[in-house]
Image 1 (tube, rainbow, N blue to C red):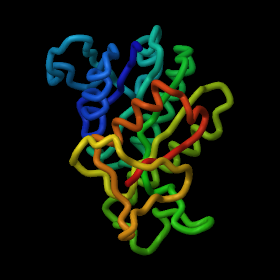
Image 2: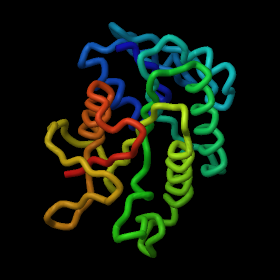
Image 3: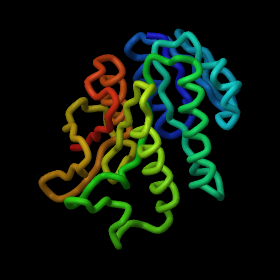
Image 4: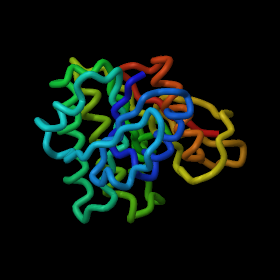
Length: 212
């Protein structure tokens, strides 16, 4: 496939880039610093301003799918910056008539009990709250979409560097935990689940999650 990957040089984006290229897809990395993208076969890089929706729409035309690993973690006003960026990406994907938009989500909006989301529990770390609330708002924006063919993949609570095992469980809106009560997934296996979804399209117009 021809894939536009927003945020391809970031923590999750770089794992998605590696996984997509390993499967023979053609990727255009849309990043703020294209000079940081290593030259590889089947890979192009272009400078993008996510907040400029009109320009972004032009850049998203002609792809089989758009994958967004956009993150606001580096910004002081994380929530506002991130939500504005997500709105811009949604508008651009619609204007470009992108066949699919796949979005890297957060774990905070997953339920730990009926009607109780992880981000709303007393134990949720304060330093991650702004980005978690932004990710929840991104999910709400996508769920309100009537035109766009979107998918959002939430990781487990802990998303860390590890191994690419290809062995994991998928869920919907509930936080996945293992037998010891841990909720975790490697960034490598998260990338496997996302590119699987890109290829198979089993969770269109919905959110799903991945964990061990």
